[in-house]
Image (cartoon, rainbow, N blue to C red):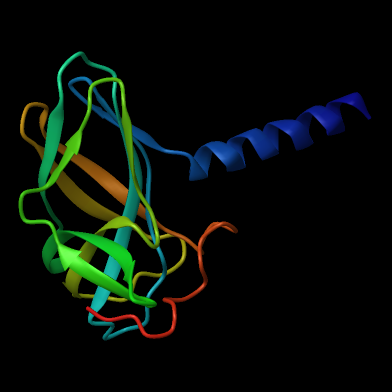
Length: 160
């Protein structure tokens, strides 16, 4: 019985580790990059993750690219007069020293324009993030269903 319990606990630990993935670039730690599964022919997909700056100086996420998308842009969503609007951030986003920036549904996120295939649950989509100081780091976006805290779909009236 004890060995069966140990095997079950070990199995849960391994399963949890499969979903939690982290990357480093200089003083930056990139936690759990993910995207939602898409359908074939979807015009866009979104990428999310958290980046923590453990250093003493600010850095900046300046660009991203993926071989699975025509282009990748950094965007900010915000409510404007009751309508969710999105705007591109061509200057990138600052990662303050000792701070964490969260790219998540309804806020900062990456837009993968023109995905060249459907993202299926369990896929890993390569993504190169470029930071002003830390340089380039290749991560894998895990295609997975939304976390419970994320909205299931874009709010009514979403405009791009």
